[in-house]
Length: 170
Image (tube, rainbow, N blue to C red; front, top):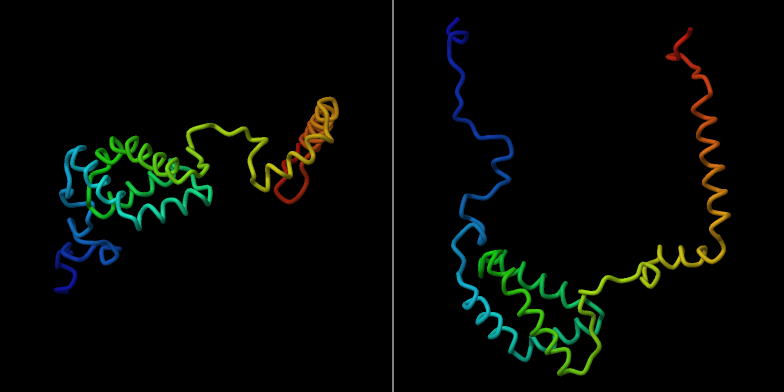
């Protein structure tokens, strides 16, 4: 009888609580190491002027990775490490990109800025290659006839009366 009159206790852990970190336990949850844009730019100037970084960056740019992707990856990694906040990183992003382009120019390599919108016909993806093969075969009139035939088939399927166990009977 005593068990029925006890009040429930609410001091138990929340479901999934063991899977989360303590508040402030992640680097990005604490105050950033550099809080102004000038400090962040000084950090990047210093880290990007090392010979190891330059060699790695040139290798990455030669592989065809766009400058925007590389710069964004660098700044997001530093946000996650608590070096700077996301807003100061975004403000420093154009300067990071310019520094990477200067590095590519000094190494005399062709690089992709990642700023130009590519024509889908010139993309190197498998889907684009497949589509370009069949684009020449189909002309506009054939495509319109195919679409019309498909629409007619769909309309016929819709007009068919339902049958089966759950079909309505009039």
